[in-house]
Length: 146
Image (cartoon, rainbow, N blue to C red; front, side, top):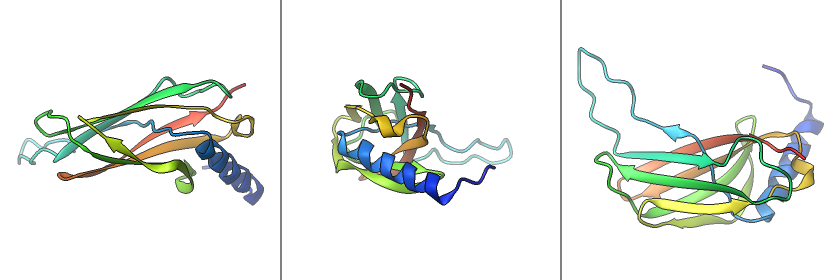
């Protein structure tokens, strides 16, 4: 794993904060229940979530759509909230503005515009979903292009 200089971390933090100031955005990967062993049966995860962005290479200053979907183990959509953060090397470096969004009928959809300072920085959007049945964190890595 490459070690980045403190200057690069500072730039990434500034980029994430600038991205957060541009408007809501949450995209992430898929979280699934742990694999089941043939010897024993694990109960299904109480909630399942998916965070999907248009791609992993958004273009600077262009609307980039993403969607968060969350269901219970039976596939029924859940209500709750979605907290959107920006991470760099696993560390939270910024929050969306506003940081919390409503999850209604199992879905949150929004667009995000990345600023020029984000070009080339490996950042990730992290959506932490809270429902009455539990919470789940979803991550979608991006590297912004011109």
